Length: 213
Image (cartoon, rainbow, N blue to C red; front, side, top):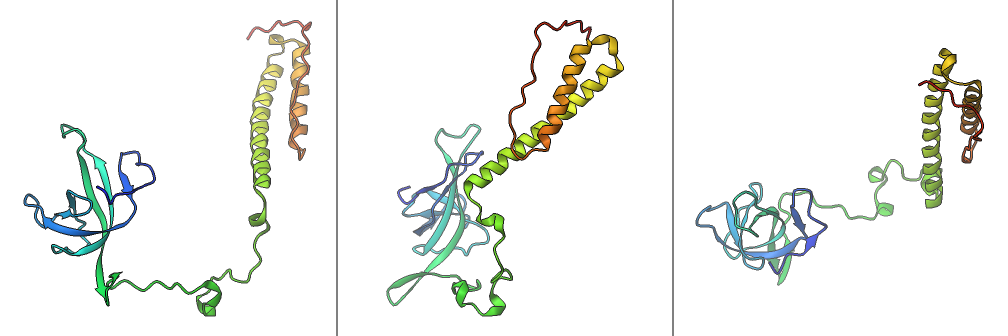
């Protein structure tokens, strides 16, 4: 497999993709004629895609291939070999070209030189301000949004707990209830700020702890 150069890491199923390369097709498989073909440079026999033109022996193709380990009782190290895309190579005046067949030609005209009707509908429009922001801006924005969500979650939980305290006045001391109310007020104030300082609720170690729940 000297021609095979891996492209990215294998996927979750172990399938490995490779960079496209040019190779010459050999004979078809005796066991799966017309379905598997030998690749001279890559070696071994490969499954040929149904939609690709069937090759003849000695014909060159530009190929995109994948391999995937076989499971079950297969021989260790054996893999499935699949050609996922194949485009014939043609020779003109000693030069080799990929035969695009009936495909539409690629318009590689630079955008600035395209006729007006072919240009993007966004051409000439001002770029949104957020598209020009720095990496530091987006890091700050992400951190601010995260803290806002955390604060809202904490506030919701605190309000529910405070409501339980008011509904069961005998289960917690007045000191604890007042302390919880102060924490809620701090969270409310925190949501109204642009910056997000840490909220530290002062602890009173001498306060009685007569909770029953």
